[in-house]
Image (tube, rainbow, N blue to C red):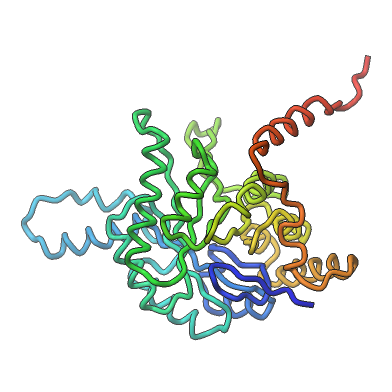
Length: 336
């Protein structure tokens, strides 16, 4: 059976990718992910704030007597263990590349070009097979329009694309005014792939301590639907960019659904954090079993199989599905 797929122009042995998490920051665990069957690994994200902090500290050391604010370096958590930090990230890329045969994809997380673009070039030189830009921005300023926020994303991708030759993926949250148009602009700007979607982490309020709580909840399978919708709508509309499904992957069922919708690859983080790197074996086994039960010989045979037909009536069709869903819901019986 052929589970191979093409993502970002990279030939993967299967479509399951271990996405950025604390697990992928350790070379030993990366080896275990490869042994468990991962098609590729995305390293933990290096944050723009970390790069700025390192640059600020260097400037403070070389600017004795200049006006500066020591507090300025404290906006990013100290002692963060999520990745190796700017100084060690390039070494992590190189060591991971040498340790395994599957593609190592580096990840940069930020919103602006400041210092980030130059670091993308250094990551390429360290040997990453590809680079994932995790553009995580909440446009909280009410005077920033949707068009401005989207133009900033496109400009950032263009700037990085001009500096690196390795494949470039862009990971986005879905909360843009016209996501389809943004996806096409990013494709034209040089993105080799889009990862749909990054979760927008939303804070809660702790009623006991009266403070904001930023605890992360791992994703669940019911969060897959928005990604399925947009992958199915975009998979034949992007001339160049691959599509990766992300968020909500717990079992092989979600992997299969993303592929049926038109994804080229499927990323998982929460399932591996819950169950360990070996869980990839279960995902692959479930995918193979499902294909064999239907006499299907490859992943390519199901890719986009459930994709809706394109055309001018696509929006009306989605509107019709929405209305039908609401009108058909009956809910639990009402006790009288």
